[in-house]
Image (cartoon, rainbow, N blue to C red; front, top):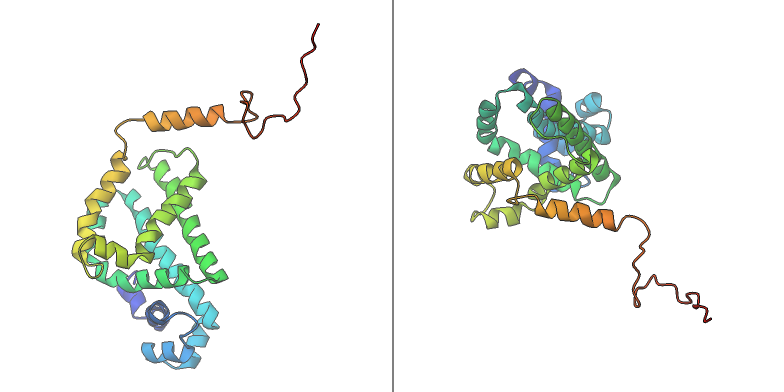
Amino acid sequence: MRSADDDRTTRARIRDAAVVLFGRDGFDATSVRAVAAAAGVSPGLVIHHFGSKDGLRLACDRYIVDEFIGRKGELASGRASALIEQWLADVDRMTPLIDYAARMLTSDTPSADSLFDALLAGTAAMIDEQVAAGIIRPPIDRDVTALYLTLYGLVPLIMQRQLARGLGAERITTEAIRRSTLPILDLYTHGLYADDRFLVAAQEALERTNGPRSDKGENDPNQDPDPPRRRVS
């Protein structure tokens, strides 16, 4: 759905049908024939374009990563307000993609791992791009930051029911997303704590506990059970 021209291609039509069916019914429960019927093509044409059902899933994965991560990368273009307005208008269109990601990522399969790894790599690349563009501060540990940003972004997709309930809605709606937009951006922009006392405390604690301890107490589990006896003169 990147452009109107792309949407009109047979390949894109098959891919979009697969995203809907895989997200709704699951990968294993969806046949190539079902995808073909939904796209209005023959099963042979699905294989012609994607090689196999697994090849079709990989194409869907790439599309999901591009939509979720690629759009955030567009923030560096300087059109943030227009882009956010466009995203808010696209909530209904994104629903099948969200369902797909939630279904595929919660399956106990190597495919779920591959999709997560692709999203993680995309997030790491996005961090690098936005640091270079001056949008975000350089993180203390870029890889750990990318991991948690990826997880934070995926939890609302996987826990849609609880997210909707928390917002007083039956499902994720445009209004629910609009209500969430400013609080989330405020959290990312200004942080949660009023000052850095906990960050400094954590840094000090980590420094004190880095390496062997020299202040073992009487009941310390690492205390030498047979310390050398003091010589009496």
